[in-house]
Image (cartoon, rainbow, N blue to C red; front, side, top):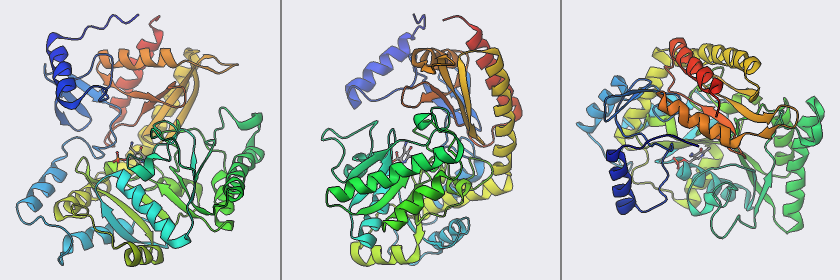
Length: 434
Ligand code: PMP
């Protein structure tokens, strides 16, 4: 039983929110946090209490980073307009962004949200292949537009998944398909892609694309069996489909070793989509794709997005890339991420509840189980821990098919000291009997 008290003031705010924004507008934590300020990895509530942010990937280079704030202010006070004029800001940014990708990903389209970026990618694939069949993973989420929401089993549209959509299980080494291991496991998961293609064809549909987050973030970021992606994409390409990588979560160096999540698997996508961290909170998203795909898309779709790629957004995006580079944030993600994982493994030895430690760079977590042999998911216990951490000033969340995976994905300047605070608080909370 929760003994958490919600203050009178927060009760009033919740009621006002329901009245003005409608009920069911999601809020984190049994005792929601009323935030008034952010700085670096810290968030401050209305009573001046400080919280360690171990969750938010949107303020990628840190909340209210002065370099990003200055870039937005400077550009907003100089010029801000849409992209139907010649302007170097968008070109300088596009050039710098494209430079972080592998060949042949060489052309950019800008938008405002991750959902829009995925919508563009789907249309691009449709134009290029003339086909409509799509493959996604179970428990994926790629956005909220009509077309994109048809791809999610966790937040499906009221009418259900589209007839042109097939889902495959996310590749998972902790709960492996049929108990397989290694190469056999990778092939078995990849074979699910081939089966999905056959199933589309049985319905008279051809494959347009597979759309996956290469880190399988919303699926609970399982350890992916090596070689899965190579084999899966081979099936896709043999069927004439494209590989769309949704980099909304792993992108911009979060995983430490690579700027983009797809790079961990050694298979270059045809189209990459990105959003959340791109403008450090300023609404900026994009698609970077093969030039021929973008050219055909522009020719046929005549795409225009009023706010996408405006000068202020591009200045914000450029400033984010500056900070990642100047502050060595990708290296920080690798070093601190390795440290956290090693210490989480230490906690795993002490606390039976921790069934699996997973993640890469500054995207890490642990799957909690009631029994290490049966791996029965500990969803309720995970919820208790997330709420107890919040009461102790550390913000994180949970995810996965059973909401039993602690999800931690802090702003990129997260330090070893920050990690120590997170882990000692977690140790305390895990030690408390429910
Ligand atoms: N793709 C993934 C993998 C996401 O997690 C999300 C948002 N959680 C989106 C796309 C959609 O992004 P947005 O909310 O900016 O539309």
